[in-house]
Amino acid sequence: MTFRARLLLSYLVLIALPLLVLSTLFYRTSLNVVTEQAQKNVYAVVQKNNEVIDTKLGVADQSSRALFVDKDLYDIFSKLDPDKGEELVAADRQITAILSKYFSQNEDVYNVQLWTSYFNFGASRSLPQGDPTKSQLYREAEAAAGKMVWYPTYDFITMFDQPWLEAGTIDFRYLFSATRLLNFSHLEDSTLVKLKPEIERPVLTISYKSTVLDELFEKSIPSGSSYMVLDPNDIVVASSGKSQITKRDKQSWIAAFRVQGSGTQRIKMNGQNMIVCFDRSEVTGWLSIVITPESALVSSLVPIIRTSTIVIALILIGVALLFAYFILGRMTGPMKKLMGAMRSVGEGDFQTRVDVDRNDEFGLLSQRFNRMNDRIHMLVKENYEIKLKEKEAEIHALNMQMNPHFLYNTLNIMNWTAIENNQKELSKMLVGLSNMLHYTSRKDWGAVHLSEELEWMRNYFFIMSARFEGKFSVSYDIEPALYEEKLPRLLFQPFVENAILHGFSQLDAGGIIMIRGWTESGSRYFEIRDNGRGISKEGIDGILYKESASIGIKNTISRIQMAYGDVYGIRIDSAPGEGTSVIIHLPHNTQY
Image (cartoon, rainbow, N blue to C red):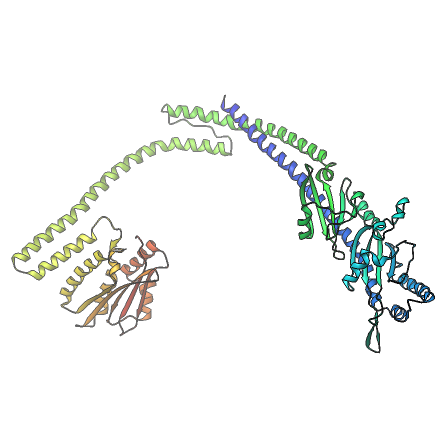
């Protein structure tokens, strides 16, 4: 395959693969976005339904609280004689009117009654309840001792033991109720007056048809969805599956939803992906659950998303093909010209040039090619000159190596001459100077052990003592462990030289130089202290910061910071007439 064919094929592959990936991602992302938005909408519907339920049932709860302090009800029950039938009938009319005042505006309430063991008051609808005090509703209300009890949907025939109703169709077969034991009281002359203990407290019963919840969910949830409302004991209060009402739902995933209280979840049921939205009522504690197949949420949008994805992909592929042919033509033409010119250069014709007729990268490449040919002769000449300079450098290096050997030999001859003339002090000075020269002229200027540095210093002090005729003395106080650690060469020399030449300039004798070394907090510290004339603050600033100051000290500071970092260096403490202390700060056990 030619380069043009390979480039075209590569271009198409590079276009096709990203398009395939992007199309797949676009399709799935769009599908997920639509699904998540639909999921949020269903969840919002569930929450809204629960708010509506709480509002409706909350009105009944508030109205029932008002009955506690209703003076008319207090007067009726405090004076009522259960053994007098005419009083019971009269009281029933009054109580019915009072209950109607509180609950008649609530269209969702099916029936409101006050139950006692001797009479059922407020029977606005004829419900054959028998003796309701024997029912589970009554017992739970008594056990709650005044708290509102929301009893889930129940079978009226079973609850009140009325099997004869099985024969006909009744519209109140399935109800759910709120019950509360009422202990009436009222304020009389700022005193709270309650019913006497011997008076039986009635049980308020507010009943609703289960269809109240059914109508709310059936009108709001998406088509194909199912719903159910469960009480804390997993009894079905309302459901799209009518046969499940009043039964217990034992599905395992419900427990996790009950703990969470409100939210959405994607689960798989019967091999199908489902979106479950749930929310708990603040009034009843019941859990409303809406189950929607994912396919039902996006079924109408999937063909649109799939079609738009395919159309966009095809358009992009067509545009990519057009650009491919155009770009290939622009690329391969200049490349052919360059290849011909390079063939000529390979045959030795360095005067070959390529015509530059464009300003893009290929034009720049052609210009660079032309410049390359112009530079070839210069490069040959420069290469020849470099080789000459390398030869000169080698000769210079040999001369540099000869000088130290000449000095060592000369010092050695002088030393033997001093020994022959019995000049031992001079011999010792010459040996020390030879050692110092050898130490400073070594090719390797890497780190040295502290022991080597101190040996050089001792030779230096010996020569300087001879020069200044015992003007100063030197003492050492160094931790033994520091002797084997390495540090920059000639680290102490600038400071001891300043102490001898400047610090002791006004002394005839008695100069003391103290060299200390210790470790602290992972660092090494060295101090060079003298009892000389000292330095002013301005003098210290000049040494550390001015360009014209001591080159040796500034060089030493630069070497320390280049080797170990800017946090390390030196500190000078001094004052006129009080001597000088130089503290060198180095890291612990670090190779230079």
